[in-house]
Image (cartoon, rainbow over the protein chains, first blue to last red):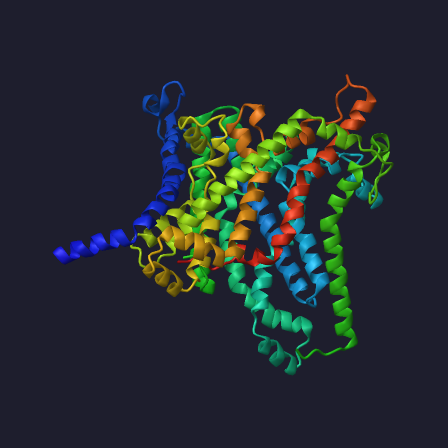
Length: 304
Length: 290
């Protein structure tokens, strides 16, 4: 007993600076992540800023029900899912393909220059990216010049709901296709060269080696990346949506998180916004669990 | 590697290089266009159609307007402040956290890692966060920009992984010699993990440089606005649409948009290539596990 207490004291003494180091970090998480969750109770209240949380009336799931019964629910949920599906189908895969292409290059100066150049858009702020998009999308500007050259009609691209998703996804590819390759290139550089040599001796051409050696080597990384991508699905890219959308494109552009911002903070309907936000987070967590479980069953790769 | 040099293989290589070059060009082109436009003559720029590789006419009027705009100057200074102080706070807390969580013998390690990683996948949302910041009295304060983003969990985990890869003997012998954990962190761990530290600093600094949404949420006083907020105003809400202004003013506004983009992106674009060779360390995977 006494020796147990002695060991405990010794351990505390050994790690005394560790406690001191973790303290501010722990406080940060407890306040800015866990205490934040306390404020989520306003989702179940008819919150009035004047009365505060303790004085506001509890109304249960009323905000959730009124959201789900409103036309906004279907519109924002659909837009969130469709935009994410587009992003996974095009943006996510484009980085993988581009990595396979870069991997075929000879090491040297040109390869490094290509990498530097394609990483660049990743470092440009979303405000500037959207500013450039707005500028280039005007009916007398670059995008329309290209469309006109190809025989299309000039139009104001960002006020057309049918064009919002392509613009959003294409600009995302532009911004992240290079950056997205880093992780895959690192994985490919670790592929055992003897596998390639054996395949060559067996008569495999370059494309066959990519298919039978490189792609299988990437699968575990792709799966984990994909699960994490699912985990961020519901929160993805709302800053970009808020910068790019307008009333004429809400039909395809308004996602759950942009709706939370507009109703909750812009129109100061705190409780309702918090309810929609909480709905979003819970769905997100469910999607993540589902993706992780599915992946563990199918590919034996998982986050946990 | 054994490489067969058949004509079809060569053609494949050529097509591959061609496609890569095209993609790299497309990544670069918008910035070339913006750069060329920013030095153009305002009237000729408005009339210009199609691509732009070189200024159409030449003038510095766009840059003159930008640098005579007091908001841009104060935004620049505010952004510098947020980047410097913000990154310092980020790095101190991230390395403290990473060091503590990489001590294998420390009993609370796993529990705290779970507590931190969980926040990557579940958050209460934008509005509770706004209310928290408000109730802490941080609204319209510079702290609202710095403190709520003090630690990025992903970066913390990456840094922890790179600390965990450092041989334990180094720490143990230093500890025997009487060095405290703070000294071990600053004199052994941070120098040994300098590649990761460099990438983390870049990531945090870029995050601060490019941030605007927190300012939109938490700041009302424009004198505290970072550069991006003014860039947003100029790019999004200052369009050539005013009927009361004369044509020249409208042309100049269009030109100014291009100049302000260049002014706001150049510092970051000058820095990242120097850290490029360490990027792999910053996006390390498998690090989320454990």
